[in-house]
Image 1 (cartoon, rainbow, N blue to C red):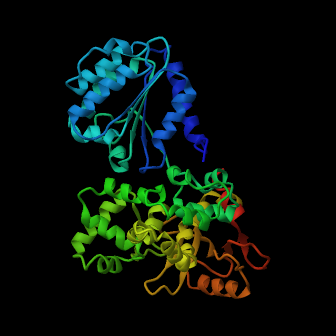
Image 2 (image 1 turned 90 degrees about the vertical axis):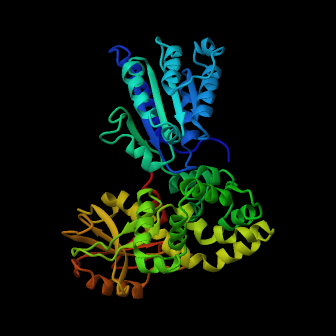
Image 3 (image 1 turned 135 degrees about the vertical axis):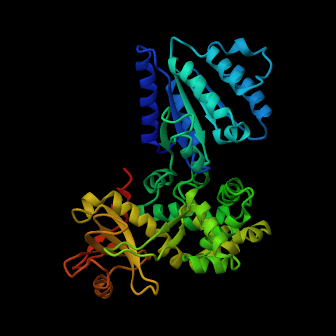
Length: 473
């Protein structure tokens, strides 16, 4: 795939920040900082590259490699000298800066004072880990020098938890930067990028997770099975290797957390099931691993939505791509490496309908929450699900005024995402029975059905892929 798809809001936000730098030049406090975070391989660096190319201002783009403090300082000095900042040639003959204080002062010395510029520090968490004084040094130089220059400083990081902490109370850079979260491409972006119909775009989103590098190798207009047949014949395809790289970066030393993630990825949803699948872990060890995974936004911990509190926590892999990778691709890697990717494709085919039926549910709930004003009853503020310990009932969609404990249930729904199936009167009867078992719902609570193929049936509000796709304009 060629061209740059999506990211309209992010590009506009970056452009607004650069405009603020221009406007701030008159007040003497022109410098601005952005703390940009997002999961690995969601396209943060590509987004910033696109922005600086469009902005047409002098810039420097430095990416830390995380090897050592000395290596990154040397690389910073070399990148600064090679940048298109007007005065960069002044530092071409200098030795590598010995400290980050010296490096940032060197940077400040070559930034233009009569026009805006952009400085990007990519993979900033590496710099924080390498040097405990980096945050304080950055804060000092920013306050004393950079904030007075017309420069936009963009600090980028894939360690989501660390990037969040950088802007918390007590940290040196607290309230000095605007936070920006870069999510994966959304289903509407996927539809535009691949030229797919809405229902097929959701399938592609479940497989790729909206990761630009994976989508870039999907031939425009190709079906899911055509793409999988192509990608799984190549052990180096982005679809295969992205999962390994994400896990290696997220859990370089935490083997237990990775084991627990694998258990969740293979279908473990409750504390007991996950512990058993992970090798009968002790409760304390399992709790610690789950805490690590939830704090890093790798898995989500959810509770039933109703007017009664519940302790029936369930876990799921938050990222759609990792969910697919853990279910099929990770276990199938040895088979692909033997040149039999076709067998992995057949394994996916066999389980696709049931796997997709559950994987689409959190995507549907997010879409419904986004389009609640247009498609759900008035007063719907949250969208979740409901279940009991015995799964009797288990309800795909519950709309309410608030969560996790609601005051009022606004609607109850079912997700039926099969290729050729429609919602019929038997499904309505089953949904009505489940509604009667949901605390806070009654016979006047609206019924809705989210279906892959919209038919015609009375007594329920039908929502199809086309409507869901409007959740991401």
